[in-house]
Length: 593
Image (cartoon, rainbow, N blue to C red):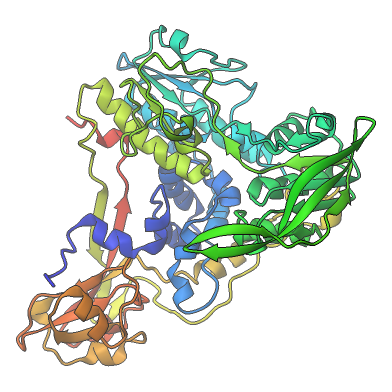
């Protein structure tokens, strides 16, 4: 293998597993260290610059960072990255003076943003400081989009949502509420230099089985139900409620139902429970509220009498897997009849683009979705861009933010007649943390420490009022203890061949046996022949140049705990622990003069 080019910004970026997994590439270890130091405002601002909505995401993020967390190399549970983000939001100081302001002198370009959800708000946040005039068109009377209508207040308090939405709007964004765009063809006649479509996936899937039309009054589409509850159009529900679906929306529906008076609320899913799309913690929260989940039940009929819903008939199935595909096979057991007063259907969401005409230059592809460039977010009509759920279907808030950053870059390049394919580079820093001969300026402990559970409010209170937040969050002591579990995987082991005397001291001290001195070979052979075979092909091998004995140093980046013992033991300083900082490019990097 050729020597590793650690100057490539993506090399060490990939080693920081949590940041690499985050769609917005938030510098996770950096803000966790700041939380441990009690610098909550600084931690919040690092988050705000990357992911825009720290208070919201600290409560609702799908947490792709946590399954990637390196802490699971030494114990079962990852660092509570998401809930530490909330700590930064809860304990931050006054930040108004730290928020970028829009210049008084505008650049003469006007941008329309359709929808006031997370993706449109994040695009506006990125563009406002560059002098753009941004105007949002929102069909609802308030901003937030699906963050407001589909995430219940017991998970995301209204005041947190309002604070972070208003922070962006107060930068000078113009918002026209109660304005739904019903014809893009007509809208494009207005005087905007670019149009961003961030309308989400606002159409819940329906279930066309016998009895659906007759029972319409008591069968509710999940996302419509949650929106009606959020705007207080719906304040109660029947005593017996069946929720159909196994995703996060289903979990929100069932938990909302018990707060509106449901006494017997049940969730039925077609698949085995292990295949449910809902996040593990969402399922756990529902079960903590004593909501049963019945797996392998396929709804076949809504049973009614005199036009009123009486029950749902379910066929029991079992799952068979072949070639990575699942097939549901009827078990032959008798049809199960479950009585109910209301049914909430949370079986998926679709985009609704009836308002985009097919003759305006926007091409549509599979599933009647617009064809959008996955790098630039540009449609086939050059001045129209898409992002969030409107681009490729339902995702999550953090993915919407990542889309927003790329779309804002593209809009800025487009308005400046620059190529959208030439993307700005990320900001990368690599510096030594060395303080003494064998001392570094970071905590390098890796002892097993259990993840701290987040305290919850009294269920007697939370189940009686849908606006009372269930999770209380960490206090400052708990936050410090949980932050201390972080392995600081952004502090990299950097090897300097000319200092190495091949004494193998680092090999002896390494607790994970991930350092090797071996004859060079092709990658597959190296992966097989090092002391602990490198089985994770997604993570690279760190390979040095040729050493005096003709061997090379090979380190498996997947196993490394970044404990720094190799650097502490090395008698010649061939190993150094260097902090790597990566911040993704944003629109202000795109058209630098």
